[in-house]
Length: 307
Image (cartoon, helix red, strand yellow):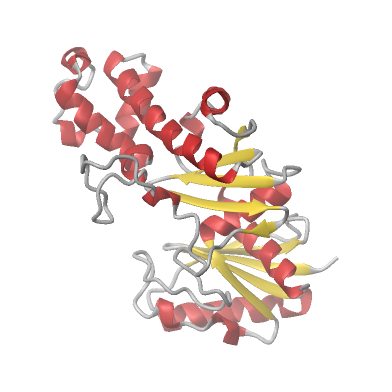
């Protein structure tokens, strides 16, 4: 069975290891701090590949940002990576097959191959963190769109009357309501409108100072205000997910990211299937965790090298 070196390039660290076509990890996972310049990132990646050269058939790179259709460059600027990063031609790193893909797509591939989406035909993956990312694989094929930028689900517009500005500069993107940042926004708005705030354990805080941790901790303490804010946040998540279900008709939705542990996926699945006009879907929590980008990058590189 062929093997690939999977490398996940993050803003603070680079994680790497060897995986097979099934998404199984075959080596010790290693990590190194992400260098501060694009040239240093290139040199670091080249060194990592050379160290593993004799043990691999291909190299997969997972990165934030939009990736070109040739899977050789990251086209967009990425806020956590240095200037010049989008000028790197990763295909020149080695004579081995090099395959670059967006980190959300890589994570979806990992879950499809050897995670919560294993055994399903069409897997839609939604990553809930500071923002919202997405990826989809159907019948083993990653859906990338005409320019490779498909599944920017966080930008799904859920209102038309400019209620809340998103960090991207537009108004009413789904991620400004249903991400980790969205939960904080729900708390800020709720503190100004919900009567339950007057008796909340956070009643002495300024609305803008209430954190996502405050809300999740307050839910555990059964604080009425926090429960109401959290339920509003789940409602916003549901609105986006049921729309995506009707559009893409997945038989499995995998939710990942830092906020997924707070979500009752069984209840969300029930609500989606009651509302959706297409066939029922399963909603699951991701299994591959922080290794998802690295695993998926390796799996996709092996798939590309076999074509």
